[in-house]
Amino acid sequence: MNKLSLQDLIFQALIGAIYVVLVLVLIPISYGGVQFRVAEALLVLIFFSRKNAIGLLIGTFIANLFSPDGFGIIDAVFGTLASGLVLYLMSIFRKKVPLALIFPVLINAVYVAVLLKVMLDLPLWINMLTVGLGEAVVVYLLGYPLFIALTKNQRFLSLFD
Image (tube, rainbow, N blue to C red; front, side):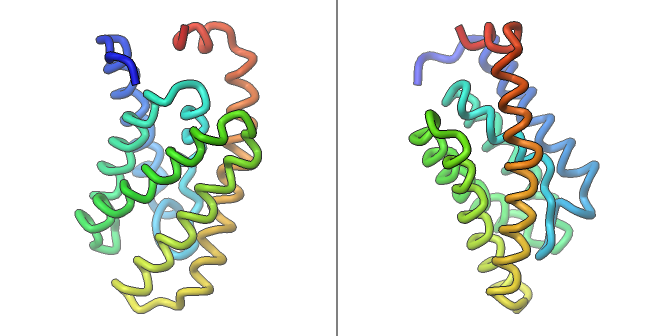
């Protein structure tokens, strides 16, 4: 990753803030065994620049501190690590966007289901299914169209020149 400019830092702060706001405004559907974390649509920003991982990870960390299930710092740390793995894999497959979107589905399904099993003794396989389906809906029905729209926006693309 190249040196970060002031513009880069501001852009990353903006990404993180948008992620947190989307999670907290939609808190009833952002956490738990059945979740549609709309902020996850922003993961497609990794396809435009690996630097965008900074804002996405900061947003994930802060949003997970507010977990209503009382997971707080545990979810902030381990959820951010899971998101880091997701973003790394997505960046490797960035030329195959629809395929790369499977990584948040699979990794979050496993991570969240294991967290819910360990912390609340909720059924592992059911939560893998429901979290995975929710994540798939968000990244494929919101994130992918967002990616397509952003690739057609020259002003947005000019941010990464």
